[in-house]
Image (cartoon, rainbow, N blue to C red; front, top):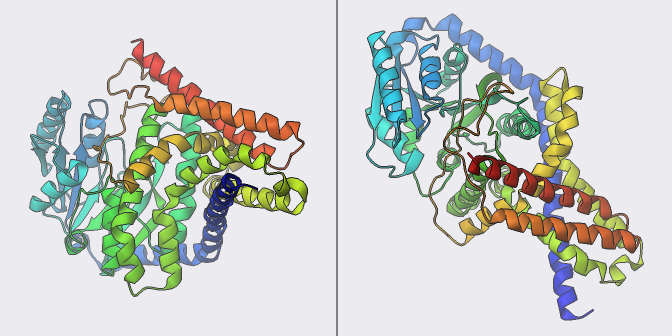
Length: 498
């Protein structure tokens, strides 16, 4: 082999081992979930029972609900009205509408706030003339005047149930608890194949991963919405900071490094709208991927030096760097054809079997976690898992989009906070094409088409040379890139025609 083949081999095997590591961790998290599930739920039930038995409602803590919004004309009224329906002593509930909008959302929000003030709610409207610090800046501004000992936060597309606070406030009877995250539900999961696939992915994170981390003494994170913070915890951890695109993840790690406990209540479900267009989903994923790596760069040094168990450090490292799987996917795809011509790699059965095993564990680790989440969350889980192949295609197809985000974070390329558009979509026949805020098609889609063609070429070559063990994985990549490219063009072109 010449030097170029050696380099390709090292890249190929290195990427495979990396994917294998993240894939194996999915099985570890499922194991942690299994061994801790029953005890954790019993313990949480006891916490709530003790709270309501020992503390009369007149002694409950004051809560401030913060609603950060930016150009959310389709969901703002629904959000504010749902918060005003929370079943909690009115004299202990403050609501802050933190509006950075630049369109008619301003008038809509003001009108609803005035209406609710007239009904006796302690609700205020704060409009900033600019978006300094984006969402983190808005939350920081509201915190200055917040009356509550506890701070609940909801994004514009969430619709919490009336008992949300009664289900979450009891956890803060433990003075060590700094934040409680609840599980995201789905208002429009049956809208399309895309929303079905996203819903399964969200269930995997909230149904298994978050619970497993919280119940096993590992670091977990606030997901930006549908959670409650102790105000003292936010202040002690350094407050909301806007130097990453995932201010929620950043604050979570800073708080835990300060010794605060973050916990999770899977039985408290807060429904939200799932993005209905692929370009909105890609924008959301770009923000999460870039913000996660930014947070890793900012906090990993402190984390590795902290006096915490090695297993906690290791899991935190995998947690913060999880989006590195997407660059690793691209490296596997790009080096697959050169590896085909490294003849000695396939001369003996041992090497193809090794590669096949690594790819299986890397690919089916996340899929197993998603399948497991459907089984533990839903009685009709068997009817839901038929959408799992679409999630697999989605997960591989956005590899280029997320790799770009990872590289921007690693090389400190600055970009603004682009929020995910919400359209108030709940039913299958609710339209989105005639509405504002659509994210247009971009040049990434051309690369998705090119990678789809490249993967297809690799698949044909592997089949031609009878290298069947690797072929199924190239088939997944081929379908994934073409699937995301097709949806990107369909949704981008459809909006452009309006």
